[in-house]
Structure formats: C-alpha cells, structure tokens
Length: 162
Figure 1 (cartoon, rainbow, N blue to C red):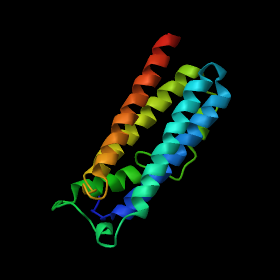
Figure 2: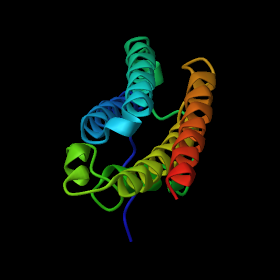
Figure 3: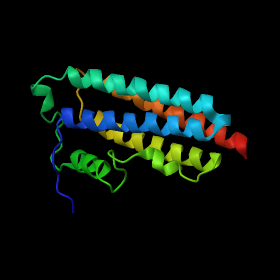
Figure 4: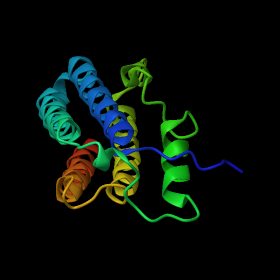
C-alpha cells in the first residue's frame, strides 16, 4: 500500500503547471505532424497555455497558510491519489509527451490526446479537493470544464476521420 505523503497547494499547483506545459508541447508537436489538424492542435495548445497562466497566477497568490494541507482527509485518500498520479504509475509530469507521437497517425494521436485530457481531468478533480474556495477552487473547476470540452473537440475530429 502506498503511504499518504501530503502535498501542499504549492506542490500541487507546480504539478498542474507542468501538466499544462506538457499539454502545450504535445499539441504543438502534433500540429507539426498532422497538417490537416494543425489549427485544432494549435488552438488546444493555446488553451493549455491559458491554463498554465491560471495555475501560475493561483500559485503566486498562495499565502503561507494556504500552502498547508487544506482538506480534512483522515485516511489520506486524496493525497495518496495525487501521489500516484504524479508518479510514473499513471503519467510522469517530467516526461516529454511529444515523444508519444513518434510514428503515430492522426487517429492514434487523437486517441492519445483524449487519454491525456482524461488523465488531466482526473488529476484536477483531485486537485480541486485540495484547494479552498479562497485559493481558487472555482478556477480549477473551470479548467476541468474546459479540459472536458477538449475531449469533445478531439472526439469530433476522431469521428470525422473514420
């Protein structure tokens, strides 16, 4: 069993920033590989850049008190989940996601992108539970909704290729 290792809000936002950097890099690389989807991928990359700005802004405004764990989680479930997500068990936030594109066709890239978006939604859903309203919980909720819209965009493009 993985032991809970609490993250503070600063550490969680740092992970979220890296996820967004990876997303932007992934979509920019995909835009170079698949010209027919260039506009879509560049648009998604720009959205990931906006998410990065949001998380950077939220992180910069944290007080010392807000950097402490904010949620009553006696069993450490949320923290264990975030630890697993941040490890290489699910995705490695330090990895270069563009490497996933090597030798892939448009359909494969769209499927990979949908999977990455799902992973980010799951991570941000756990993140949301570790952030107070004052620290920007509503902004995290908005990013989750936008990540869901990315899946719709990607799913529509995938359906159009079949």
